[in-house]
Image (tube, rainbow, N blue to C red; front, side):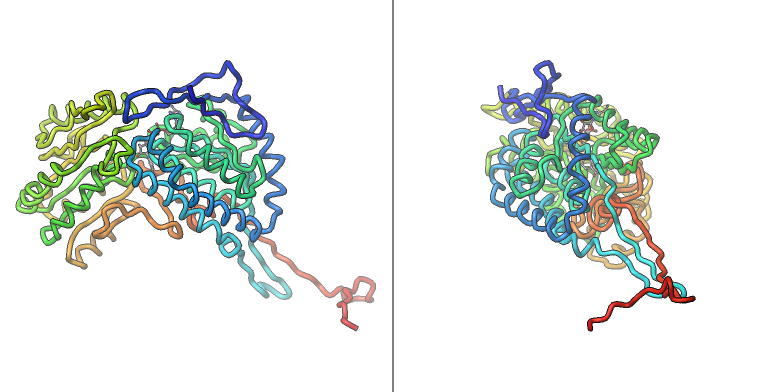
Length: 498
Ligand code: NAD
């Protein structure tokens, strides 16, 4: 059986290491296993990182950028291979897998501009003969702990910025689909990065705790579910680290009566069901404003859902593939049952879905649930599957209130032709990322990504200038160079060209 090992200078797995199964979600078979590391293994990774980081930090930003450029090219050259590997472990279709790599690649492109974005601030003459300058210096060793659902993009969000800024980086990817992160680390070395600058250690809670407790790791970036994000945040901060911890989501799509419903339905088909709903920026809740809008939308959604093709992850005609593990399939189906018991109307039922020839795969059919209300548990919690819930709002005010009052505040979208309504909504809604007629408003690499409320703990976003702030600390120098004066014995001599 294929074994996925750590990517370190000093540390292939010990034969006794614990292991975790990696599924092929399309076939329902175990295709590989990943070794799980412990605190002793992390110690070795940190020791290597400590050795290489000072020289990297002293390498001028332009040289660092050249390695990022080469890395970007290598990812592009290897796009197909990366996408196939990613798709086989995650279950998302190849096009989605390419999107996953591409959105990470865009952060690497941003990191190629590090000489420009790292330039500091300077004040000439802040006082008599006094100048002040501030520069951003790396923290030392950073760590990233990432979820299964974007195994290429999210690691690149983190290590692209951290390493370009001069840090060494230790990545602990999800144990469910760890192969692409390892492949990215290999390509980074091929691009010219010093060995040991980016290391990948595998593991579960034991490794996460070792990272959070390690004295030589200065900052931890986490993305995953909210309870674990909160735990990571608290434990890391208690240990004196800088921590940003992104959590779960339940994004709402508001549909105003004047919206172009054909466009909305098209957008929802991708945003609610694409990648089997396993996106933190998916739209699993749609909020039509007014009963008439709700009825018209529901009528148009039915044929669109009927036309969705569920298939194995390398089926080029499939709209989406299986979910990631059998446990996750059972969990999503249980949420559909809970919604039914709570009084939701199951309009389209994706439970007991079976794909001919792939009966053991972890497939769930698209599911539509109407008449969902805010008191229902299935509304309050994240389902993370191909399930769209309709919550009917009576007016605009209720449509603003629903996402604003929800425990999560990652993303939200409004569909309307009315600029004033859109502006009001974007301004008032208590959510971090807003789309106006854009269903999945993931900000581009030169802005930054981050939700509000229980979708993010800590106060800086991922990537962009926010990411740069997270991975650096400011040093401010106030300087005065007196001319010596007095009897001339201390006088500074201004060199001349003669
Ligand atoms: P998860 O919380 O199960 O795992 C995330 C990471 O935490 C993994 O590396 C895992 O090994 C580790 N981990 C698991 N159990 C742990 C424990 N008990 N203690 C410490 N660490 C532990 O998340 P997931 O299922 O891999 O990913 C899906 C979740 O991530 C969803 O909730 C989704 O909304 C969220 N997500 C959020 C964002 C965002 O930016 N807000 C982006 C992508 C995914």
